[in-house]
Length: 109
Image (cartoon, rainbow, N blue to C red):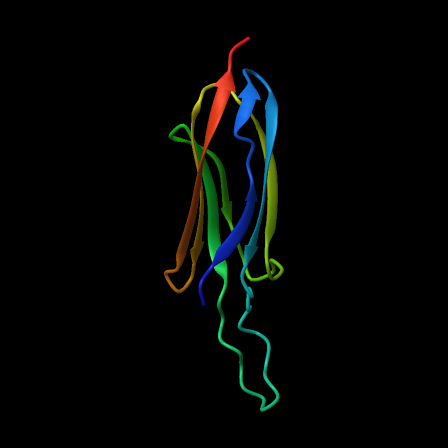
């Protein structure tokens, strides 16, 4: 399964402004506890980690567990202080990785 994400990241912000990043990643988040119609366990397949780096600094880090719903939605805020790269990274328990990158331009008044 290939991962895909919808991401909302502003491209510009004023220095000191609080901005919000919102993302929704397409993933079944199968816990490994469910059984199919034949009584066999459906194999576990979850995202295990999410992180965000801004200008080389880690600003959000989450360990995800089987209790997280399918297609996880994550939103968070931080203070824009410098222009820099934003990198969102999801990692799965089967080694899959999805990375989305953007750039935030901070405007000094």
